[in-house]
Image 1 (spheres, one colour):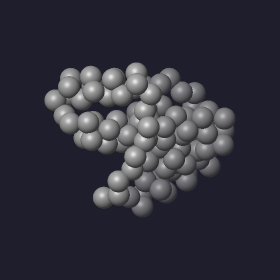
Image 2 (cartoon, helix red, strand yellow; image 1 turned 45 degrees about the vertical axis):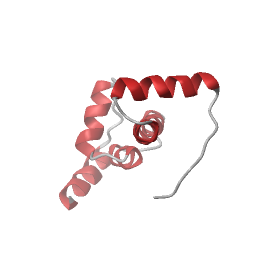
Image 3 (cartoon, rainbow, N blue to C red; image 1 turned 90 degrees about the vertical axis):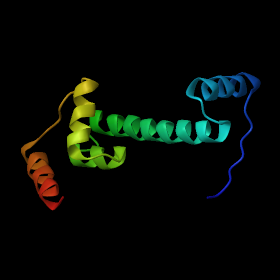
Length: 100
């Protein structure tokens, strides 16, 4: 596993220590957990932007977010996203679902 170093402002380093203590984890594990969850959220945010702008279909948004189509539809429902489904999108998404 590669090692990565980063400099944190004092307030973020203090918050890291606090969260690590709350979770009962060491700093390294807390950083990996926060990074993993943060990266997943960044992917979802980018997928939302692409989907809402019409640049991505349901299938494409799911791929950007790194989730299944069903998971993407749940994310879209939870975040009250407007649907941009066209008949071609539904056909392509159905084809993609069959491949799974």
